[in-house]
Length: 271
Image (tube, rainbow, N blue to C red):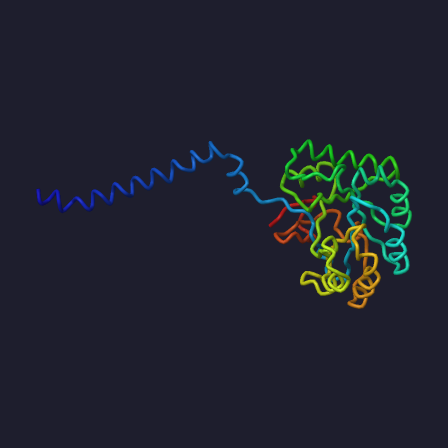
């Protein structure tokens, strides 16, 4: 009896170890069967769009505008860009192209990039792969029919994306583009705030992509000052099509596109 009592703690310990081992084996199996997508997501690397670019020392940056609503400021914005000898990138929604075809032609004829901002400005991360591709290509075809050019830059609406959104863009032969400097012009916080937000942004640097909106309240008033300020800092402002690397690149964990001279094929992966 005493021997059994002395061995009891050891028996209990062995039982606990065995039970923990059983649970650790069984729980992943149960979890995998109930939530296979969650397991796949955690095990795989998240796809990323291009937030900024490794320009290999070149002091180049890009200015971009999202066009989804009004068009009243188009002439003013184009005039400011022209006076400063700057070309920008305009991401257009399909319904904006339908409503303002003459504005689209003005933007394109002035030498600016035309990008795709989806057809209907949906929450793309809530759509399936095929739904995303359909929305992208509907906008693509509208731009193609109007300008006889094939856009290759895609910006998801609201800046929302997941692996499905990025895959859809890539399968439609697009470079998914985000930004690393947000002017916050859509918040309408005033001219001084917008100027400071861009020129003193913590992420502003070689390869930055700056976000504006074509119908923001204060942007027409501050754009000239911001452009001159960027030039005073030594930056050359180029359209995104000239900023990014077209092939042989990787995208690191912060969304920076980096040349990859060790591969012969284009990649779009995060480290």
